[in-house]
Image 1 (cartoon, rainbow, N blue to C red):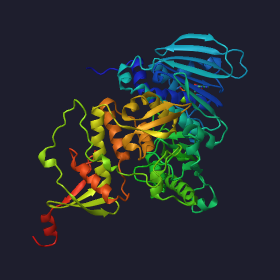
Image 2: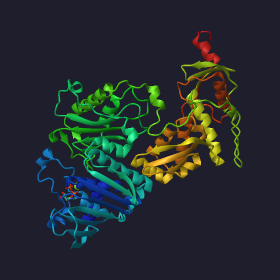
Image 3: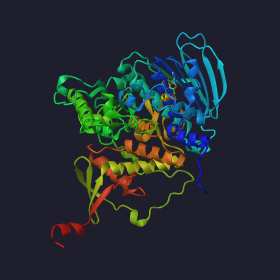
Image 4: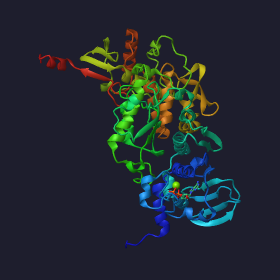
Length: 576
Ligand code: ADP
Ligand code: MG
């Protein structure tokens, strides 16, 4: 093909792709504009995952009549006049790209009015061209409506995820800004239902309550800015404020980590690392804190112009920011006395009433489970291949409250009790699922489950699906649900963590998702490392492991046992 210059429309769509990746990007840009306009109330309404409809209503400054069409021009901005202005930037926007980019990939309407204006403007754009511009009365502020996103970019449309996933990204964006701007009242309506409402009191705690719920908020502490934490700080121009979770609560993912630099939402692996390092030794492996970290520093010390979506920044002195965050968080955590032990963290039930458990122990291995791995009707059970059969093992004892030592026909078998039980439960669940009869267990008293807006979006879509796995979950007011039954394998385990883990990471569909759910159930239903087992329980565990189809690996692929053959022992002892 000969070289030629692309036409304007193609250039615009390519450029728009960098700024507008998915519906949540539209929400982000429009909310940023509303914030830059000094709004005190921002309402976001979406339909169909934001693809069909997004509307953002604000009560900010509005756009003067003569500039309304210009606002949609490429690189048209009221926030920056020359490059040096970037060094004193106090707005979220500055590139003048959002409105034209949105207009390149969707139909847009705007109604806007400045203070005391007698009227207001209505403007409509299709394919980046103004199709209507009339006057329309409106109180001070701006309403932008975006319809049929990516209709003209089918390739992009194809890459969007399910409505629930797109809704959860949108909820995440609005939640983050509600945390960054506690003085602004945010409302998010998803398909007509209220999914988030922040009170706009100006207090961070109130925003945290709105996003994470009262019970989690009670376990959050403000970052202490007291002198002790700052004594060794050589950089008083870098300030760190916000709230972090005490180690009694944690998350399976990093969704609840929010970093703002001069109130701009950023993602930074460096700062995530700084934060998590401050929690070192306080959280179990694989668990993450909840945090809102506000970093304030002179604008000249940070370059915000490194990424089209402005989500990454470059610090002039990375080390200084890193250590400021780490020291502030660590200082806050050590002030918390007493620091809970990791064991306690493992069993904390976040955000719900305690569920009825056996008073003395959280977990017991029911001995009657021996041999009850029934073959569901209609499903052919493949006889285990000979070499994969575990030989009969004689239990010698438990070591390090996790390893079971057994003797077999050819030496010693050391079994990881958690991995082994995971394998047993996994196969049991797979069998039950194939027969569509996953065992469930009623809770003596229904438990309430409070979820974040993001988790809410996922749960709304799939709470019925979760029934297949034994969870009877019903909507119960705003962002709260009633849990009546849980999968039988979890009745004594940590079903709540299992639910949250799934809600935080709902990726995959159908088979893949089902596999992920079953693995999560098996993992949380299984006996933990560190639990002392009675001889009877150990024997039961071994008998059940012997009956599995693949006794050698847990569902994640890790070994369940290590075999030390007689020959190996002889070699080690210099006999062979
Ligand atoms: P940027 O935010 O980078 O300046 P945008 O394309 O997002 O670029 O917006 C272009 C201009 O339109 C802004 O600079 C601002 O003057 C005006 N504008 C956009 N949205 C709003 C709003 N909600 N309220 C007031 N002015 C707005
Ligand atoms: Mg903007």
